[in-house]
Amino acid sequence: MFSILAGEVAEPAASGWATLLIYAVVIGGLFYFLMIRPQRTRMKRHQALVEALGVGDEIQTIGGIFGVIESIDEATAVIRVEGGGRLRVAKRALAGKVSA
Image 1: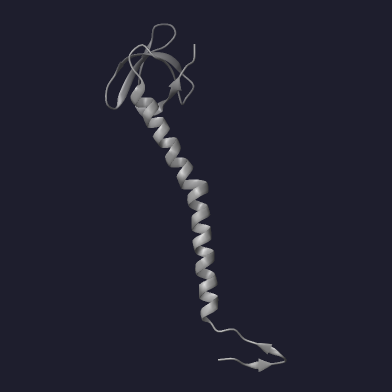
Image 2: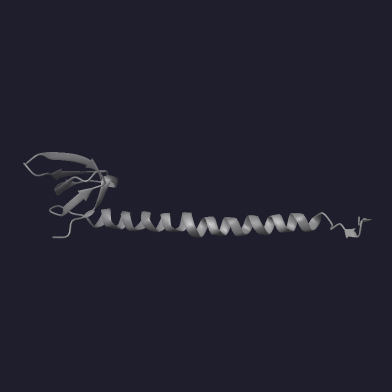
């Protein structure tokens, strides 16, 4: 198990696995707190924003289009844009309300 060659002592193999496991747990924790948790928070905020939208709200889409909501259902919203045109967009494409 231990060998003495040129004054060196070899460690048991189990300590290498323990160190590797500790590194994996630390890296996994960092990945969770730096990547997964913030993304979940953003998703929850966006979901709450979309649920709070109603007819007459001035909005902007993720593509940069501004408009006013004319009707809204579970998956889509019809918005009136400048010039009187109407667009039907997915609710997930709504970026947020425009502050007046």
